[in-house]
Image (cartoon, rainbow, N blue to C red; front, side, top):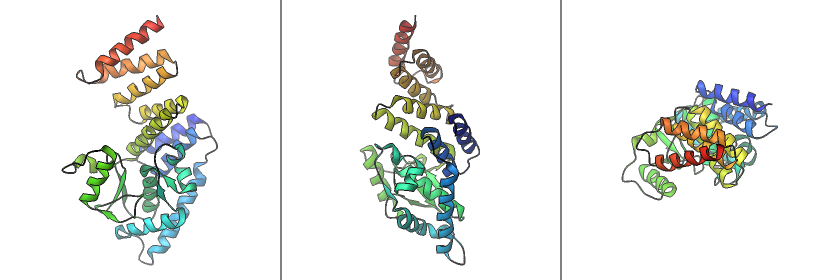
Length: 268
């Protein structure tokens, strides 16, 4: 499996709001040599088949969301983890180890649930990704019980350090496959940056640019990582692109204009 092929397959999943599990496995295949998405998709199909049996003769529906939690707890021992270990971000590792960051665990929920007609969708909450089924929100690394508003405020507070007076509607919008894969890539960019693995940090940043090219900040972040790697021309191109597209009043315009000047001086 070549990296260009994995990237092409990933973008195809994102473009059509396709199977989030398949997209996440192509993401893993790009970073991790030897990952075969078909093998892990078969594992998800097996979990879905067992869930269908647990739902009974009437089939699965929105009210069976707790059965998704129970199945994944029983079969995978699915539980949450911090973001410092790259394995916690990759779907094949989560399926193998049962340990993952919330968005990776949510991808398993979405994939298994949708295969049996449970309408699971991702929710891009700040700091902690959730899923929603029939209007009820679930934390996929917790008990599997629906969350109320107080639970939600606590989650926001634990991830941002500030408990909000109310939940912003924008926090509760459905996340598309493209948005989920972009958020997974951002998480990996941060993870590999903290580990000073610049090559994989840049690769994750490059995925972000490919997935959401309309967001200038992704070019900025890739450019700063390229600078770390000593790739000055590419870094300057990204930073200039950001400065051309970002609002004039953006907080980092002065600092990045100065950075671009330093890069030009190095290259001249």
